[in-house]
Amino acid sequence: MSGRLINRKRIFYSVIFLILILVSVTTCRNAGTWLVKKDPPAHADALILLMGSIPDRVLEASDLYKAGLTDRVVIVEESMGAYRELEARGAHIISNTQQCRNAAIALGIPTESIVVLPGDARSTQQEAIIIRDYIKNRNEIDTILLVTSSDHTRRASMIFEKAFEKSGMQVVVYSCPSKYSKYNGKGWWKQKEGIQVVLFESIKIANFLFIEKYRL
Image (cartoon, rainbow, N blue to C red):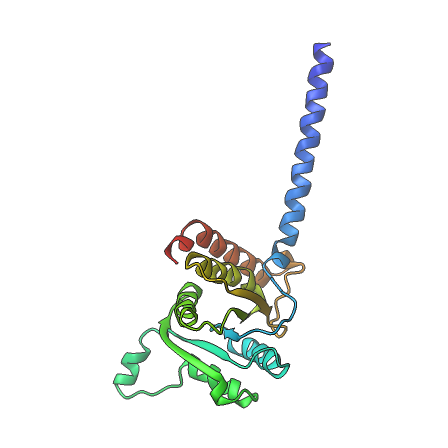
């Protein structure tokens, strides 16, 4: 009897082990697509255009604006390190934020519909805090379209939703991944770029969940 019991236990634990392996493999395979958070298109009081990759994000913002889903585009000024010192010494270059604004205007978004907020933001967390402060005194804004590159949408949504929640603000965040981004998350483990994106974003999400969210 004892031998049969041991064999049954071995079979039981082997089955559990195989199930865990299958779940882990399935989860890992889906990790790439999980990073992409896409909400159904909806009208919003403002579109938040996150800085970073300019072409794909501005194109998506332009499409949403022309579709009539918003009439206000908000951009937070992005940090460019020693940019101010460069300007002070007489070397003038167009900042990333200005390039983004110029591209949006060239694509048909009216100048008066674009709001650029000062801030010298170095991260999505800082952008979220600046946006939160901007919206806090504007009761007419309680829904936003969050436009960014596809692989950045899951983390960006987490950050903005937590930022509003911690301030007791009832703001609905619609995640809008740019369809112009090359990343889609499928078969991410087959290419070096896909592996890098999933690993880096996963680390950043973990960092936010365990550290950064308490600083918002």
